[in-house]
Structure formats: C-alpha cells, structure tokens
Image (cartoon, rainbow, N blue to C red; front, side, top):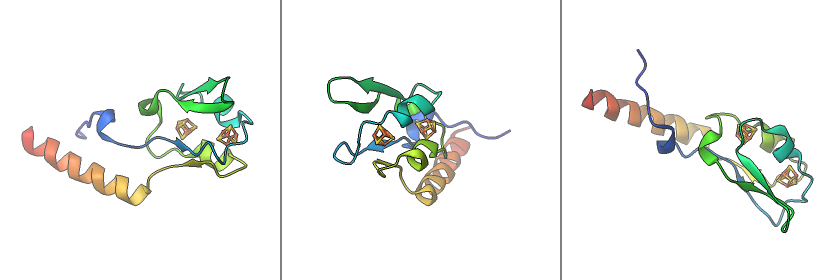
Length: 92
Ligand code: SF4
Ligand code: SF4
C-alpha cells in the first residue's frame, strides 16, 4: 500500500502575479476544484483553497494568456514527496 502524505505538506498550488494578470477570469472559470475565488474589487483571482489543487496539475497556468500563474518545479516536488514518504514509512 502506498504511504499517505497529508496534502498540506506538499506545497503545490498556483501563485498569481497580479501585475501580469489581465483579469480575464479563465483560470477561475476553468478550475473545478474550488482553488480560486474571484476578487471583484481587484479583478484578480484569489488562491482561496490552495490545497484543493491537484498535485502535478498546472492546467490553469497553461491556459493563462499572460503567464501570470506559476507553480514550483515538478522535480523539487517529486524529491520532497520521496523524502516525506521515507519519513512517514520510517514512523509506520
Ligand atoms: S487566466 Fe491569467 S490573466 Fe486571466 S484571470 Fe487568471 S491569472 Fe489573470
Ligand atoms: S492546477 Fe489544476 S487543480 Fe490546480 S488550480 Fe489550476 S486547474 Fe485547478
């Protein structure tokens, strides 16, 4: 059985650069996981539920016409998950 790691230990979620964001709402409308809320006043997405983001998904970043959404390096996250699995495995 694979070792379960709490989602909150994996820092995979979108970061939005508001200076680059044009307020087109595509990311907000696309994501079905409730990661984003829409900030009406600022006309930008808010990353309201970061840990609802699916680890490894970066679909909204690919969709963004302005390159305003970024994610950590996948390689770094894979290394971190390996390390966490070893730690959890040692405790089990
Ligand atoms: S897709 Fe990009 S430009 Fe459009 S609202 Fe989202 S972050 Fe802003
Ligand atoms: S990467 Fe995928 S799951 Fe995460 S916020 Fe974007 S569309 Fe939603």
